[in-house]
Amino acid sequence: MVPCQKQPRARTERKEILDYTRTNLKWNGWGWEGKTFELGDRNREALFWEFVRENLGADELPSTPSIRWEDIELPKTRVSAALHKKLVAVLDEKRVCTGAYERIFHSVGRSYRDLLRLRHGVLPGAPDVVLYPETTDEVVKLVELAVTKKCAVIPFGGGSSVVGGVEAVAGPDLKGVWTLDLSRMNRLLEIDATSMMAKVQAGAYGPKLEQDLQDRGYTLGHYPQSFEFSTLGGWVAARGAGQ
Image (cartoon, rainbow, N blue to C red; front, side, top):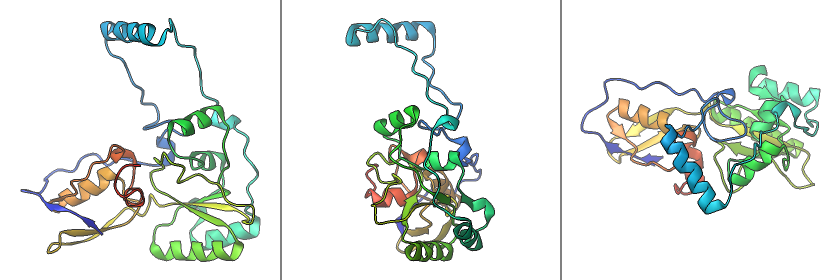
């Protein structure tokens, strides 16, 4: 449950719905794939390089291109054919992912250290499988199965963590690491108009949650710095502070 506020008037138009499909996001950076930061006009660019020279003592910045995700070496997944079949029985084939892109994307958060590790292809580990539950019942079944298989379960929302909270690592006594990507559990379930509380699934990204509330004449009134690329579950885990 999260607190909400009544809006003076409900919205009459919906904004464009953002598509957080993982291939639409940068696997080695922050934000949307294909979106870059432009300095603007030549005068602004000249001022930027003047600042770099005067304050950092650098006449130019060397080119440091990222490694391609296809070239990153990952440990072999520990999900056997028999286990894969059991996972598919809980979800379906499309929501049980053992491909390299999904495993790399979900391997670490998005701190500066994480981005350096991603760009260099040096990762602390990678999940053996990435799972996309859509209901509480599916989450319960996956966790129960993980317990029987002695595997760690890592919840993953927006993946914007800067404190290592989503790193796919586990102790030596465990036999695998499963990442549960909750981004498909993103619905506003109900609003209690008396207590001004909303019941929302943990995987709701900030923009969608705010949009769903405004469609009913309410607003969240909570805008952490990572609002566009983080989820309610992460806010709760970090006590709403953005860390």
